[in-house]
Length: 320
Image (cartoon, rainbow, N blue to C red; front, top):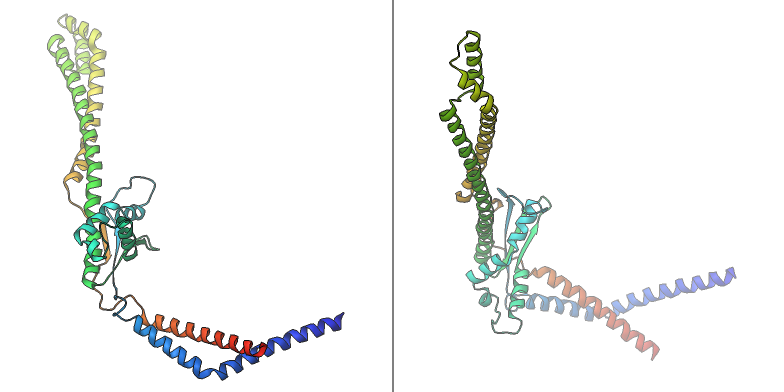
């Protein structure tokens, strides 16, 4: 059994060696054919990757961090920025401003016009988050100037849209705070009116000082403060309660007003909602196509294919 296994192993090794040797012999035999086909494929790759057949594309990139933002959900600031930059509102604005229907050569009346345009937009405009939580906007275009302008305008439109979104939020908050302030002021005014009534009708001004006055008068034998004593006994607790509540409500009103002024200031203040790290600029070197890659792949593919064809031809000859 061991000898049979050794014989089979030896045969497989001989067969593999024979195949490798025959393949090398075939390559040597057809070397000029393979070389000619490889060179021809490389030349064709260089020719068909030229600007005659493929429009060169230039890339412009902007990198920015979100700033002065408050998130609307559990997403972080960069994810929120990514969502707004990828919004349909910004896409439609860019499409309209640069007439991308014409620029991308998409017929408006075609059956899948909108889908085709959106696919082209996604191909030429890429918005991604960097490993450091910044956001990158890459734009490819036949014109380096247009690529830079689109990238810059996407950022500007993000800024305007973020301002409107945050303004709506600040207006809603400031309106709510103003309503609370109005109610709070009404409560304070009502208590002050009652306090004035106690002062004018019953002569009650300050419970502690007037209580001492009554005590001193009785100790000296005077009866002039009998009415004041009755008023203090009947309305004194209310007087104390009113003054305590007015002070507490006044503090709450002051806190509300402070927060309201901040929120209201945000509704009218123009702020930038991004910090630019890399500004987009017109590149002087095309990003696509990478001709040497196309030429290399064409040459390698043609070389492998020609070797395979030569191998098949030789096998057919041997078996025929």
